[in-house]
Length: 237
Image (cartoon, rainbow, N blue to C red; front, side, top):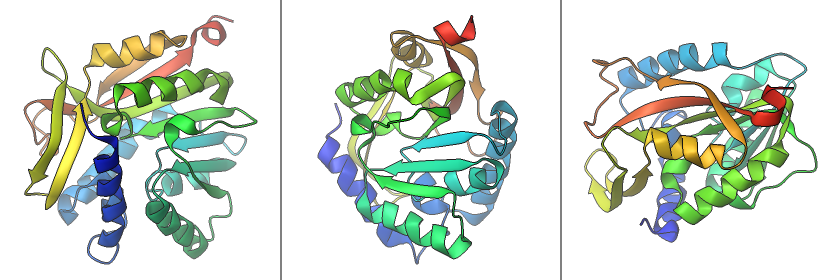
């Protein structure tokens, strides 16, 4: 299993990429400018139509990084609360919010598995978080979700997914692409569904973020996948 401390050190170190790579690259790890542009466009085409975006909507961005998704979504909703456990990445996000005058984006420095809120959200948006969590952390994050989603709300998960028979784990392996040691747990689609079902959520839609043959599908073991979950009771109300 991955070492949570090493994972956090990796993300803290990513903050030092601020002057070396585009803002979006810091947290989504795509450093090739052409592929970054393609990735941003294709992902928005997949994600935006599946979210109930309006000026009445509140959105929780759980594991927000520097706010790469928060700032895309902020003009379309009432409020974004961006939760990030790396103080360095959260500070970059706060500075960007000031630069953009994005007054409806609030950064909170907290581990995702420790975050709770006094009020629930219309959308809980989780992007690239679970692959960096131990099983214990993942269970705790999922356990908080029922209290974080409003009646009629949803959870949108965008995360790396194993397409092997079982999960694919990378434990402190040096990445020549990232020029750093990297750890991640790519759970299977079935594991994600079971994790959310155990907390009272039903899958209503899922699929690959990029079509087969897309140059963004770089590795044979994994694909970037999206999942839309609704709370069971509210789905059938």
